[in-house]
Length: 230
Length: 278
Image (cartoon, rainbow over all chains, first blue to last red; front, side, top):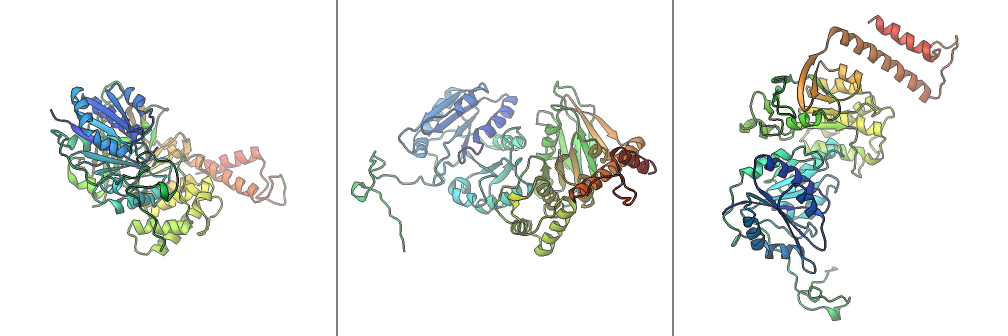
C-alpha cells in the first residue's frame, strides 16, 4: 500500500492544526481518505479538533521523552496504523517546541507553519525546521500590515529559498487551496522504513535525560556542554 | 511580465447552481466593489482571486491573469504576490521607527532610490491621515488612522502587488476617497469590499454577491454617479467642519466670520445646494 505522508512542524500556536483542518476539508471534497496523527508532550486537545472532521485520529504523547526523538522512533508504527485506516493522505503534526529539531524525512512533504507575529528574527532562530521544509505556510496575515507581510516573507525566503511560501488564513481558509494542490502533486510513498531524516536530531544523553533534577556539576554525567565565556 | 487584466470565470453558488455571472474582466486602473450581506460569499470570492482558483475551489471558479490560467507556469511565478491587502483589523506589530521599517521594505522590494521613495510614502501618508506622522515615530504607536494611511501609501508606492484589496476601511479615519484615487492612479486593480455607500459608488462596477455566487454585475448608472458626487461633497463638508472643531474653533452663527457661520441644519442644506450644482 502507498500513501502521501505530510509532516507538519512549527512553533506552538502558529496555527498548524487550523491550517491543516482547512486543507483536510478540501481533500475530503475530493473523496480522499485522510488520517491525522498528533505528537505532543504531556497533553493535547488537537485530536478532538481533527476528530470533528470525521477522520481517524491517533495521538502520541512523549511524556518524559524528547517529543522529536519519540516522533522518529514511532514513524513506522504510525505508518502501520495509517495503512490500517486505508489512508490516502496522512497528516502528522509534531509538537513544535524545540528550535533545534527538524522532523523532515526524505520523500515526505514537510510543511513548516510560522506566523507573522513572531518577529523578523524568528525565521533565522527556527533554523533547520524552516530550512529543511518543502513548504512554508505563513499565517495570521490578516492582522498585520501588507508591508510587514512582505518583509516577513522575505526573511523566510532568506533562510529557505527553495521552499514554496504560501500565505494562509487558518480561520477562514484563505490560501489553503494552494497547499492542497501541493499535497496532491506529491507521489505517494511505498513505505517509511529506511527513509532518512534531512537533519539529525540533537544529541541528548546526560544525567538530566535520565531523570536527574538537582543543579550542579557534581550531578552531571554524559553529554554535557558548557558555555564558552571567552 | 506586466499585469493587464484579471478575469473571473463563474463557477457555482452554495447550492451548486451555476453563477449568473459567467465571466468578468477587470483591467488595471479599475475599481470594482464587491457588495452583499454578511455570509453572501464576498470573502470566498477574494480568496479565489488571491489563490488563482483553478476550478477546484468549492466555488469552482477559475481565475485568469492576462488570459492565462493557473496551470500555465507563466503568471504564477511572475505574480507570486498578486494581492496586497489593507483592512481595518490590520495593525503594525513591529517595534521599529517608520523610517527604518519603510527602508527595509523598500530594500526587500529592490527599489533603487530608497530615500526618495521613503520620503514619498511619508508625504502621501500625511495627505491621507488626520494628524501628520514623522519618520521617527514608532510604528506600533501610530493611531488607527495614521496606521491605515501609512498602509495605503506603502501599498501604493512600495508593494509591487498589482491587485489591492481594500477591506472595510470605512471607519479608519482616513480620506478613503483620496486613498482610492491614489491606488487607481498607480495602475493597480482595486477591489473594494465594503458596506459603505460612498465608497461603493466610487467604483465603476460592482459585483453583487448572493448565496455564495456572483449574482449580478452592475455598472454605475448616471444617477448613481450624481449621488456619488453629492455624497463626496457632503463628506468634504463634514471633514472641513471636523477640522474646524479639532482646531479648537466652534460652530456659531456669526456675520463676522463667514467660514464658521454654519449651523448644522444650514450646513446640510448648503452642502446639498453646492453639490446639486455639480
